[in-house]
Image (tube, rainbow, N blue to C red; front, side, top):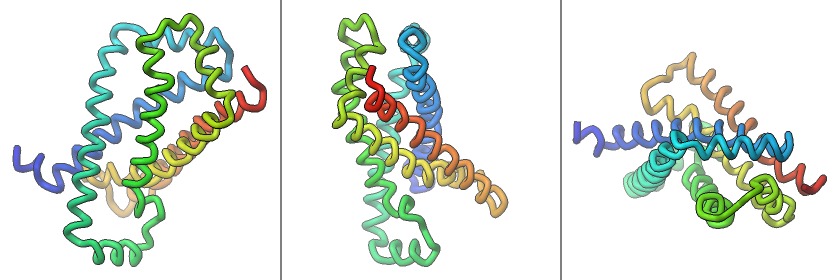
Amino acid sequence: MSNFFTSSIGKKVIMSLSGLFLILFLCIHLSVNLLLLVGPDAFNAGCDFMALPFIKVIEPVLALGFLVHIIWASVLTIQNRKARPAKYAKRCQSQNCTWSSRNMYILGALVLAFLALHIATVWYKFKFGEIHDHYEFVSGFLVQPVYGVIYIIAAILLGLHLSHGFWSAFQSIGFSNQIWRKRLEYIAYFFAVVFAVGFSIIPVYFMIFGN
């Protein structure tokens, strides 16, 4: 079993499972964030729900999922480039790989950069600050054009990352064939659009209508 987790296939499986776990988190996160468009009471209620003890227990698991996904993605990317720096690029082009599939690591790194900014500016104060009105606090960031534009760019990059990562994760765990490959690709594009548009419309709304 230990050999499996240290093998290339094992690392891909771990990265894929952690990625699918993070997609579940994104579904919850987007659902709560969209409450900003409903109004202060709805969003504050959503934040109160996320502050419940059983939700807080998931936070360390979520952090671990991010770390595992990032570490294994880095390891696999380095190994692939060392093993076949030229052959991999030619093979990918011959199979009509998408731009997203060729730049998954770069997309992931850019999303991670935004995540670090988000944690430093929003999450940290949510966690350790004394915030009485979460709606007012978050909307105060989203009305700022610079932060809003960065947020939109990050949402688009996340969508591009998921457009390949979703179906690729199922392929890595063995749930893929000629029939399901196409279906999973369509589902991946669906998730990519939902997350990209869903997260983007929030800052667009506040930059246009204010808070």
